[in-house]
Length: 209
Ligand code: CO
Image 1 (cartoon, rainbow, N blue to C red):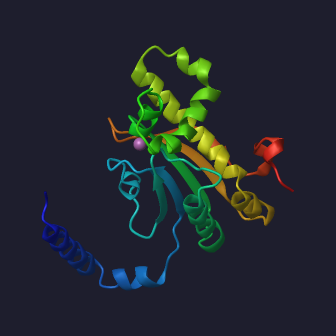
Image 2: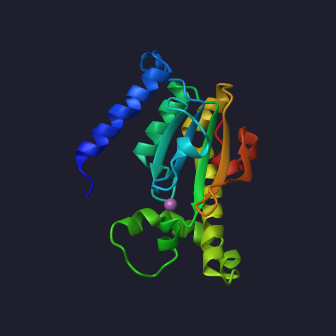
């Protein structure tokens, strides 16, 4: 196991480098919190949001959980969303899933894993909704990756159905929701061509005037 001292040593080097490059760096970050985007992604350690899209500290507001889910009753995610939209005023939100996601893979298996199966039940709901399409994919890796994409689509929809996003649109606040997927194998993002920025784009039963 790595000694905790190593982390503190690395931190001192990092902070020192930052100040050498830009003496005002931390002073500026301390007083300004104006991220350009809320990133909702998987907890997977191989997908560091800032790094994969070349953003510096301060530029992304981030929420991560297993399988990048937006659950209507998850106070954690909803609180992050409310702060991002109502206080920080982010103009865009990205849900980023990834190929090779362990959460998605687990949700496709029959083997029980305890408590997390309750969380991943939301992924099973997505599977259920697209059962025929997924059953027609013979390759298990391709099936898992397709479920990762469909899961992003479902979470983009869930975001749009929240009171927070709909209140923002009603106020006339510009807010766009996008769905992306990241491939661990090549480090590249794919745009799933899911872009929602107006309540007219969501189904009638979820819309509130
Ligand atoms: Co994952």
